[in-house]
Image (cartoon, rainbow, N blue to C red; front, side, top):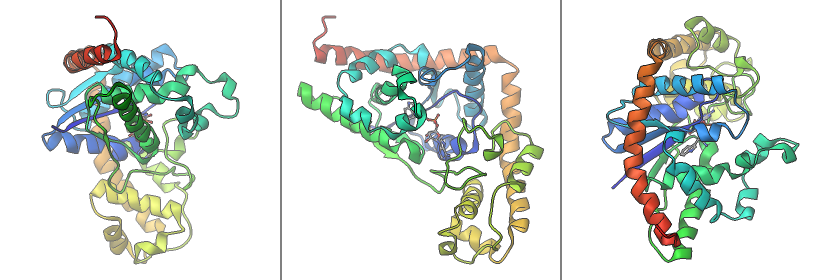
Length: 332
Ligand code: TYM
């Protein structure tokens, strides 16, 4: 039976790329009636330094973002990773399955560690084995993510296959990445060659899900573009990454195809397109921001929701971890 799992790191604010590339898809999958498990990966967050108070705030804010976007804590299992100890436990076993050579190829580690790799945490290096544990702990079949997580999902498949092969079992499923739609890689508003990111030093590079209407409109107005009008066919955007990105965002928010957006605005200047995009973005995002704000007024309720989700997640995870230990030969 299909089972969906995905996660987001509670660092900084949820941004539009996370929403369009991940959360919006999470909601669609939940509403299609499949079993869905969505995690706030706080153990992953601390692979780079987090101020404890900020981590706590970001965890609750992300929970509020999930719920405000349409995730229902009864339909989906919503919880934070550190409350289900089996993630770290299975992560250790996978540290012993994954090979150094595989890990050394992970581009996200290279990007995040930067030049001085000696100073990166060991956790940042082994990040993908914990991610594989997140997924395989629930015998997950489908993982909705943005394009940037593709390599980590391939590693997850390699870990599952090696575990099954080493121990001669057919235990962990070979998970399918679900990287679909027009918004699998939303780009920075300042630089069409960089992805939009929670951690970009420039706040103008992204739309945060907590931004108010004026801020959203300002960021779109100032977004980098080129002087040409919109073409009448998508091919005309092939080497115009900033223009293409704004069209994709419009398409994702309005649930149209990028070609339909281009057809609608053919011949128009960005001076006309940007206000239309800003209006659309505000109409779609402001209600979510308002609801997040409302939910954040009651942190105790958010904590109750996460604890409830953790209990449900643990009930699935515990027997799978137990079986894993037995397969490996641990005396229980
Ligand atoms: P994170 O927290 O960086 O991002 C959360 C999700 O948002 C997607 N995303 C984007 N999609 C489109 N355009 C963008 N600019 C953009 N930026 C981010 C990401 O692809 C992701 O789906 N390693 C994961 C968290 C994780 C996880 C897991 C995911 C931990 N364990 C298990 C799935 C399953 C991460 O850092 O996501």
